[in-house]
Length: 113
Image (cartoon, rainbow, N blue to C red; front, side, top):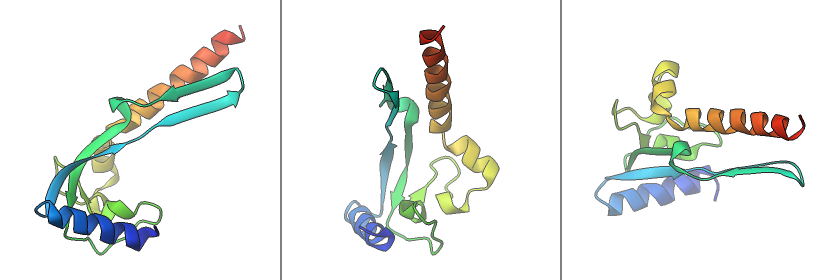
């Protein structure tokens, strides 16, 4: 699907669920440096919980189509309206990503010590 098709699909899905539903972005990371150096992470440290709504925000962010349907639970703001500071505190998974890469770098270094 292109961005607008995704927005329409999820807007309709949210409408069927009453106009607002608790949703999760489930992320995964698979890092390959070589055949012997691989790391994977799929857990709740890189998951985001938010409201998926049926009322579409007019703003679009290329590559992130659902940001115009995603509302931060704490602030009640659409993801596209969050300030940098609000976005930093709203995206809890950032620490999970940072921790994953920090640990991967550390463990890859330990393997070569």
